[in-house]
Structure formats: C-alpha cells, structure tokens
Amino acid sequence: MIRKARRHVREHVHFLGALVSQPRSTGAIAPSSPALAEQMVAGLDLPHADVVVEFGPGTGSITRAIERHARPDATVALLEIHEGFAARLREAFPRFHVFHDSAEHLRQHLQALGKPHADCVVSGLPFAAFPEALQEALLQAAHDGLRPGGRFTTFTYIHARHLPLGRRFYERLRGRFGQVEISPVVWRNLPPAVVYSCSR
Ligand SMILES: C[S@@+](CC[C@H](N)C(=O)[O-])C[C@H]1O[C@@H](n2cnc3c(N)ncnc32)[C@H](O)[C@@H]1O
Image (cartoon, rainbow, N blue to C red; front, side, top):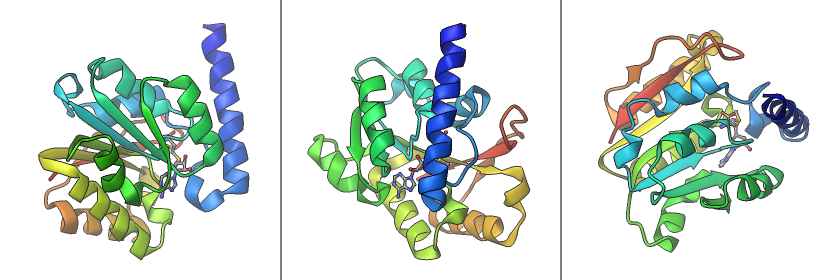
C-alpha cells in the first residue's frame, strides 16, 4: 500500500516535470487514474488479443491495465515520444516493446516486430492539443495499423469535450472510423473524462 502510494507520488512528479519541459505533448496535469485506465481497456477483449499497441504511455498508468488483462504471450508495443518516459517504461515493463518515437510511425515498428497489424490501439495522447495535421497523421497511423475489426480507444476530459477543439477532434474521429462509442463519465479521474471507442 505504502509502496503503491510512493510510486504514485514519484510518477506524478515525473509527469509534472514533463509537463513543464514539454507542455504541448504532455497535455495533462496528472497521469490517468486506475479507473480511467480500466475504462480505456474495457471492451477490447485483451485476453484474446495477439498484438496490443499503446500510444503515449507516459508513466504507464494505462500500460498497467494492459498488463493486467493481456495474455502473457501477447505482443505489446508502446510508442512514447518523451525519452525519459520511454527509459522508465523499459524498466517497468521489461516484457513489452518500448519505442522512443512518435506514434505516427506505428507501421514501421509493427513490421520490425514481424506483425502486420494490431488487434487494438489504446491512445493516451492529448489529441485536442495537437495541430490538425498531426491529429490526422496519428489517426491515420492508428487506423492503418489495425486489422479490420480492430479497436481504437482514446479519452477526452469532459470540460474539453464540448469546446471547439474537442468537437473538431470528435468529428475527425468519426470521419476516420465511422461510429464512435462514448463511455459513461469516469468521475474518479483528474479531471473527469470519457472514453471514445471505435472499430476499424
Ligand atoms: C496526456 S499524457 C498521457 C500519459 C498516459 N497515457 C496517461 O494516460 O497517464 C500524453 C503522453 O503522450 C506522449 N506523446 C505526445 N505526443 C506523442 C507522439 N506523437 N507519439 C508518442 N507519444 C506522444 C507524451 O510524451 C505523454 O507521455
């Protein structure tokens, strides 16, 4: 219990450091809570997934939920642009493949792993904070990296959801994937959030 609390504080401190040094790409004031992480992987059928991808794992909150539910022999690829986070993820999740690179380059990393497609892509990226061209490139990468029927999840904070940038992102998601399912509000997160889920 105390160890968990210490880890939590340590991760929050690292997260705040990244927020100060790289505010745009970090895009949040705190790591996702365990409740939001569980909602992000709910409905992905992780126990039957062969290849799982996470975009922007940061300090690993959602990665831990993936670790809890994925098969021990699943291939899990983490794409993280912040070098310090990528180094820590390698230590914390030695079984997973950590790529210090932008998630736009998913296909080349899947190929390096000998996997043509992923069963699911879980994204913790702060999409609405990104320029439109980058949003497009990242959604395209997720879409192209998924097998037909594969699932994509991402989250948005409820206060940002109905602002112009948040609405434009939702429309972009619909444009790319078609139907978007919206989860109930996860109140046990700072700030509260909803999860968007789509199928390729
Ligand atoms: C809002 S934080 C979320 C961290 C974690 N997923 C969570 O929910 O606690 C966004 C993360 O995405 C990473 N990131 C931003 N742009 C990225 C990109 N183009 N490719 C990969 N990671 C990126 C940041 O470095 C940061 O770790």
